[in-house]
Image (cartoon, rainbow, N blue to C red; front, side):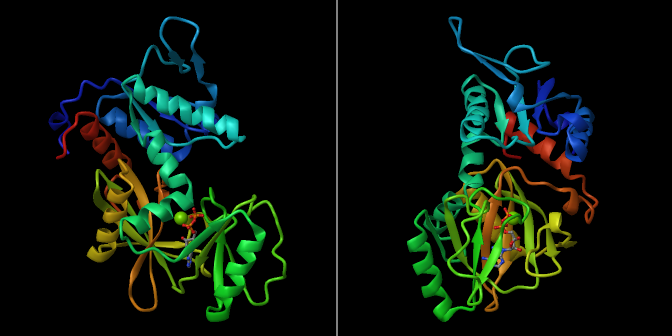
Length: 307
Ligand SMILES: Nc1ncnc2c1ncn2[C@@H]1O[C@H](COP(=O)(O)OP(=O)(O)O)[C@@H](O)[C@H]1O
Ligand SMILES: [Mg+2]
């Protein structure tokens, strides 16, 4: 895109990252370069280092290395922590938005997607195909659901509600030791989902409700996360792009990475929507610079244009 078409007054952007020690890591560096190419200087900060100062006449959010309220913030990472710490970090994003910062993705969008149960609800409510899912705290209910399901299906997937990168995603089958171990991955909530047998799945990047770039991910076994070593191939499949776009619209995401799978009957289903998606795997199989796509999209949305 011609930088001149982006008539943005944006001079400085905050990139929130939990990788301060490595200058934002690979993704942070890509973003910094892409912002610089548009004449925008960027500063890395961690949400955990922000100060909510409510001692004066007006509320102030103090962000290291940043004077006043930033015009825009790119959320690349939120460090994990206790419930109270994560709530405070999300509050920084909520409050910045209230003070006028354009937050990409904003805290509400992050909350809608970081919680897989909320995502499942919103997808189903919007009529977007997603595998049948059950969520409960009760072990008794979980056991009943699993037993019932395993009568007619060979396997069922169990995931951490707030997981990512395939960590803790497991398959349960008739031979799984019983009762289920209450380990760290379950963490008090059972998120159970019908297993979709597939040799690969898809990751689609959707920005401003338009699918921009997609890939097929092929893992060694049934987990197709890039973080677990899946092979990536760029694809252009309109049906895949379309269902991912529908998911992004249903969850009203400024941008997102949508995971899509095709079942044996050929039907596409949305597995999850990521509000802070990595793109190193996708970048490795496409020529288009994804950080620049994101930065241009942020600038367009900041300016309120829909080009
Ligand atoms: N219901 C399912 N059926 C088959 N495979 C699944 C299912 N849910 C997840 N997977 C596999 O596990 C991977 C990780 O699951 P996902 O829901 O995307 O969680 P994460 O946030 O850990 O990436 C998916 O990319 C897919 O390969
Ligand atoms: Mg995923």
